[in-house]
Length: 396
Image (tube, rainbow, N blue to C red):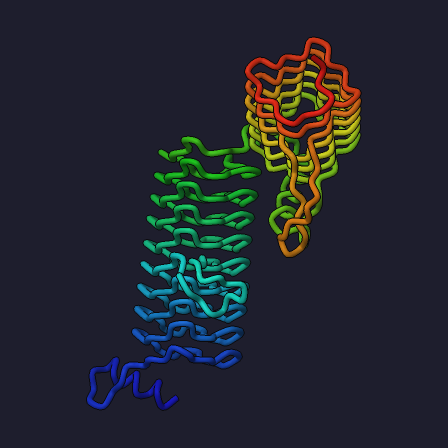
């Protein structure tokens, strides 16, 4: 506290003041409400589970600091350096981060698994409702599952930012640069995306019909086409499934369309990894550009279904009917199996067509690696310009 008082004297310009500098500060579980630490130099500081309600960190050096689970309601971080900082589960309701630097940091102590490389600023599951981040640099930042209702992100640099599963209802992202950003499964009801650059962004499972898209650049973005026309029950299953994927199964629910009638439905651009479609009626259903890793289509009727540009790893089509289905430009590959620590187990699952009916099925320009076609019916199957490697059961 003596150092903080001296810092306040420094900020006021009075004699005898000394700017607060400490590269090993640990004030976790402490209360710092309404305290001004503006311009303080506190790299790698430990503020986890502390309370800093309406405190002022403007223009402070907080490089690599840890604010996990901290109460930061109304706290000011304007023009502060929070590169590589950790805000996991922090409450930043009403906070201000105008022109703050939230880019990756090179060396941060709070990351147990840090190998010395750049580490993204982490706002995973943080609460940012009504916060002001105008002009902030959020390049490569992790805002996965963040609640940012009514938050201001106008004119931010959000290149490659991960906002998967974020709740952005009523947020303002006007003019923000979101090239290559990940918004898979995000909620954007009432979100203002005017003049945003979303080129190359991942918008799988995102319903853009209720967002403002005036002059929005969506070139090369992967979007959920026809999302507004999906039946309410199907849209809800996909929303729950998206949460299940993003949270590694902790929340939401795995999609099970087993036995359902989904004929002619447009699911283009959906992330359906791990979904179940066994014995479903899927004639004419569109899965174009979908992510279909470890999806189970066993016994399903997929006649005239379309998988143009889709990614299929370890997908199961055993005993399915794929009469005149289209796989133009699709990638069919082996799925590597990892353990809970994201380490390779040495196990893998190929795409399986065992016993499937491939009459008139079109694999033109598809890349097919390690797939199993044993006992499948291959009458009139089209392989024009397909790249086929290490597959079994393909008839000459």
